[in-house]
Length: 324
Picture 1 (tube, rainbow, N blue to C red):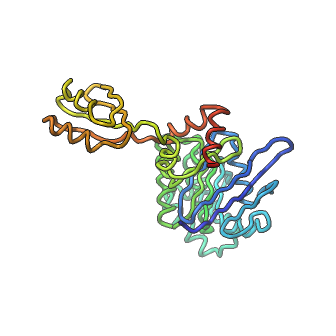
Picture 2: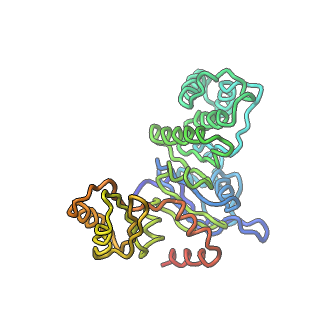
């Protein structure tokens, strides 16, 4: 068990008859990267606003760094850095000058601010563009500057709300790697809100699946996969040469193999349990060369579709399973 740094309990937010966040209970541990995954309109941004003390919950409690965000919002803001999906800067000032302005707002002494600004601009890859006006920065450069901006006050927690919107694929890869490196090097807790599955899976230690204001499930991708696909056949892929009809029949006859499907030079076996070792042994004993053998890894794509693409019935099943 890690040390909790974000604690949400029974959190609700209503706007008239509309429920934006519905009885959300969640704990994020110190130093981890947690991904809040869900479609647009799921309530992710509303949750973040309550965490930052920028809007009050209708009911429930929210604590960040041991502080009540509703009752102690200023203290929370001192210890949390927030990067929205569209960062605002003074366009006629350089990236360096924008960082110094943020440092001044946080009452950081000028010599310290200047040193931190230079170090951070180098770390986010903007050292050579430090004196360039922010209005001339690309979208990716603005997000990098945004990271430096939230880090200059040395926060314990960084909240990123859709940080990769509008960035090209290479820029996304670089930004995600930068976030991961900063979290690991500085021990910073990161809450990443996104609807991009592969991006969340790339860097997050745990994920929470959020839809219609409710957290349907949370955990590592592996744990969610086991929970969601429990009792279903395990897929095992094997590539061997020569892949003869005799070898296929031998594999199909292994106890626990339900079905075998050929795909070029590979076989996809549906099995009752993990019998990878038995399949490998059968291939070798048959005198064939074993080129590939492994379980099919179920990722966030399968998990996402299982939870979100099945409509009300699927959602009700998920809730029922969570209550057990």
